[in-house]
Image 1: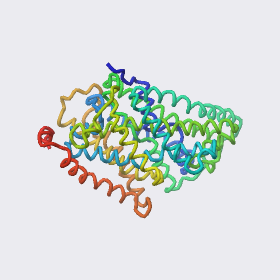
Image 2 (image 1 turned 135 degrees about the vertical axis):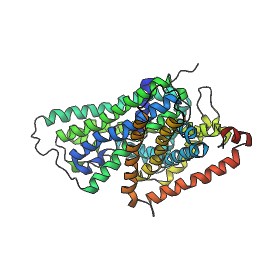
Image 3 (image 1 turned 90 degrees about the vertical axis):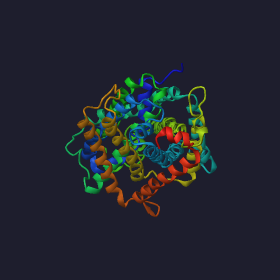
Image 4 (image 1 turned 180 degrees about the vertical axis):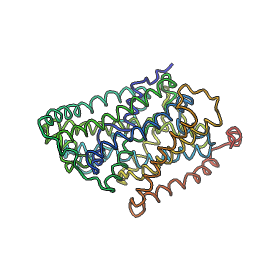
Length: 439
């Protein structure tokens, strides 16, 4: 039997699928320290915890490769299952193209000459190639590597937090919470925080490659949720304690703050950590996303070759196909548009919450080693994150990606899902498979 992913590697891989460290939370300070910390403390309860509970129940009840795709398909049928996969994979094109770019930006701070001209694109392709080879070794190898990467990238922040606490203890703190708190700043901070707290369901797609998934998924979700919250809240609270001006923070400014407060060596360490974060996130998400086309192909709705696995159980054709798609997206220079990510990811997440409630009603006797409360509790768990997603869509309705509003672009991408389903059904699904699937 192949070794499966254990609790700690699963939690570490989930950590990278969601967070990857404090990188990216700087823009939350558009609302000031006080509101920024309130948002970072509130969203784990309103956003992360309900999602973790939902995943804990469904992953323990249906520990299948493909995860969220399998849940939605079982609850709502093949059409909606396909839409779940479509939304997730479409979002991955916009999301995954940015991590090699972020890796390059951090590398440029260490050695600008290495990234000039074609060298930069070569580094981006190199990152993708490393993650492909790493993934071909199997999910346990990705999980074990995630543990090591977590430790390395967080050590510089431990030093920074320690120095900030020591330095701040000698200061007066009457105005350390001062900062802007206008409506626009609060809305931006909430959207940024939601983006930094999303992605928990990605861990569900490797369920067959996890040791004792019924036991480990609920534990991994809660463990990683706590670590993510701590690695966001503690560094920001330390900066407030040390009276670092809010104006010094912008996207990617942790290295500047570390150089100013401690020294160039710590700034360089945080830059290296940022590069490792990009590597770790791309690596863990490659593992997650590649299992989705494999599961869809297994149902006869995609090219059958995407379901082929190597001796370690890795869907190697799907890994390569996803890597090529993400590599082709690199020259397009996508910006990390939080609103578009939230629209696509949020839509897929709402389908998962619907599946949670529908399965409670349709299959009350389904074995659930972990149960997220009563039916009323399941409805409440679904309602709060769904309300936040609708709020995010409303607030970001004027955000633009190029010449098109992000909301309209997200709706257009989602609208192609049914078209793609019928095309895939016509091209790949055999009549016998259609009858078996109840389609």
